[in-house]
Amino acid sequence: MKAFNGTNVIKKQFSLIFVKFTVCFLLLGLAYRLILSNFEQFSQIEVKNTALFSDNTLPLPPVTVNEPPVTVNEPPVTVNEPPVTVSESLVTVDLPENQTLRNGTCDLFIGNWVYDPSGPVYTNATCYSIESHQNCMKNGRPDAEYLNWRWNPRDCELPRFSPKKFLNLMRNKSFTFIGDSIMRNHVQSLLCILSQEEEADDVYHDEQYKSRRWYFPLHDFNLSVIWSPFLAKSTVFEDDNGASTDITQLNLDKLDDVWTQQFDNFDYVFIAGGKWYLKSTIYLENDKIVGCHNCPGKNITQMGFEYAYRKALNTTFKYIMSSKNKAYTFFRTTTPDHFENGEWNTGGYCNRTGPFKEGEVDIGYVDEVMRKVELEEFERGSEFGLKMKLFDTTLLSLLRPDGHPGVYRQYQPFAVENKKKKIQNDCLHWCLPGPIDSWNDIMIQML
Image 1 (cartoon, one colour):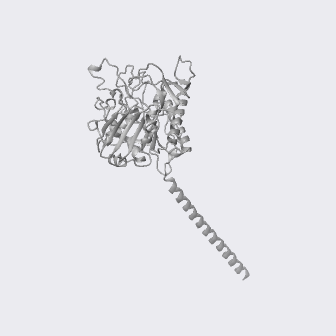
Image 2: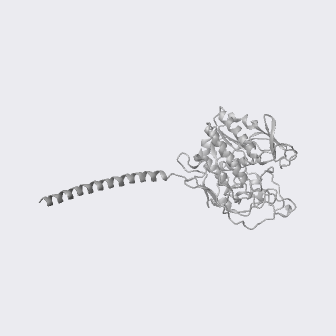
Image 3: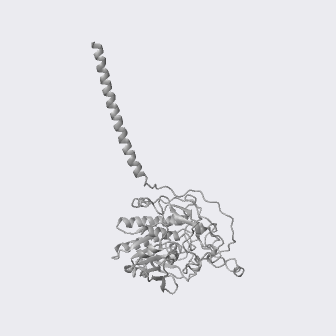
């Protein structure tokens, strides 16, 4: 009997231990499931900071045109760096932490170009404001596939620009674009899209038609572009074709008053520096020469364009931050060109007819340096209270080698009557309609 009772006790104790172990196991399983569920919920909105480029590039298509030495209407640039082609393998730019995830949403500037058979919202026949150098279809460009690609961010939808929504948002306001010819190219794109809703009146232009203003009477909206390629104060000795009689002088600690004197009147501002900093230039601070970029024979200390660009951006951001007018401001990063097998003055051309995919092309040295300066100065300004939106279109623009006028910056370049003329290549600006239209899709989404 004692043996029998002892066995029962042991069995009961074993059963009690088994029940406790089972309950603990179930509780641990429930806790693990809750933790996993929360992790999955957060991981759905994570955008990883992955490398965007590899050494792979698309094969170069057969050359379709014979290119003599060229000049471009945009003043030429010279740099102290080795010649760069679009396929040169270089270090990928690391994005600041706040560039990969914005307010819990995806990064609008990371993605790919997708085919869109609906095409652009306007044509060269429905928009009057396209300048001749960007009117690729009228100038005889034979292919049209470049018109059917739209920017598609990796992890979110990007609606097409609504001119009606934009004009209603801008009612009784002003929007000013400040920069060089790429900025003017952007404004032309915006004008073409808005003209599908309301035609603007051309109310002002300077002598060279570089600074202009348009007025939309139905919405009491002013749209303008201000020519200020350096943003800083400069003295340029060039004509419209880039022919120079002396080297440019640039005051790195003084801003161009063509835009600062008007800044208090702006409601919305789009601003950018860029390629003009690659030109041969003498640098001044406190009205004294401190160095130069590519100025042989001047007996002046040679300095890279990186120093000057950083200094001028720093001056620009400080001015905007200290201004009493708190305009809604965008800062756009540099725009890459797509000259291949040479530069603008050594037979380079751009004859591709389709976009790259993400990872198929590397950013060139000069553009990598410029964008690095821009991101660092923007980040530094943000730490000190700069309220500005970063419009980081460098990498998405890099994927569109097919969107430039190339030889079709001029009318019928291969016509018989043009045989004796130099064929110019423009692999920096954009055809209209063209890839730059998607910049406006992004802009209104950010607004």
